[in-house]
Length: 189
Ligand SMILES: CC(C)(COP(=O)(O)OP(=O)(O)OC[C@H]1O[C@@H](n2cnc3c(N)ncnc32)[C@H](O)[C@@H]1OP(=O)(O)O)[C@@H](O)C(=O)NCCC(=O)NCCS
Image (cartoon, rainbow, N blue to C red; front, side, top):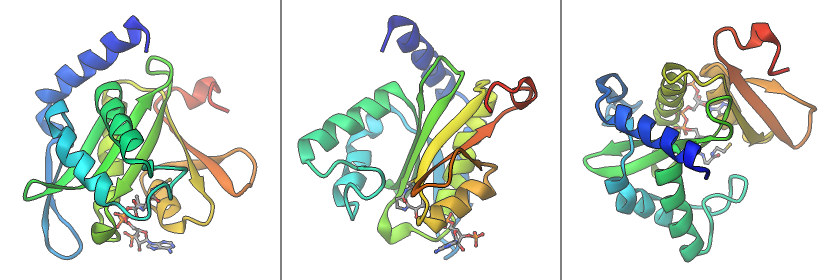
């Protein structure tokens, strides 16, 4: 990461710490109270715990890494270098998503994982919407992601949160969401 980039991410982290609107309490589909909020460095251990027990490993475009050392390094990197959000139930992290800045707010790449015990309960949708709200607030122009075409649940969640397909129809597809004014300038076609 360049110094510019580091400063940008540090500023966003600082502002997120005090931004109450991104700290959300909701009930999942089974009536369980879940808190979704921006992640901080001190959440490292609990996020790692989630990925350590996440199965199957390396299932979503090679993530989370199957090798424990690489996994630990990867979690450390995404918490410090990206905009990370998490969902927790009584202090246990059950889902994590992040927006990796690719070009100083011109666009970011999104990744998400909901622990297998907590999938299909509305948590992935809440977390995706939270990340989209944060990106919009911090004036990102575009969020981009790739998804396996057979991962119908993920595609459904992304579409519900405003993403649409771009690029050719292949096994792995690209999706994006563009924010106000950006599409009109036709920069993201
Ligand atoms: C994909 C993932 C992030 C979605 O999060 P989630 O919490 O399980 O999803 P939610 O419960 O919020 O929403 C699931 C939605 O998909 C729908 N759904 C479930 N299975 C589906 C399927 N096979 N086909 C189409 N829709 C499906 C549900 O009905 C629900 O939609 P609704 O709310 O409109 O009824 C999560 O399942 C996950 O982490 N999977 C493993 C890792 C992964 O695939 N990450 C994404 C890589 S791109």
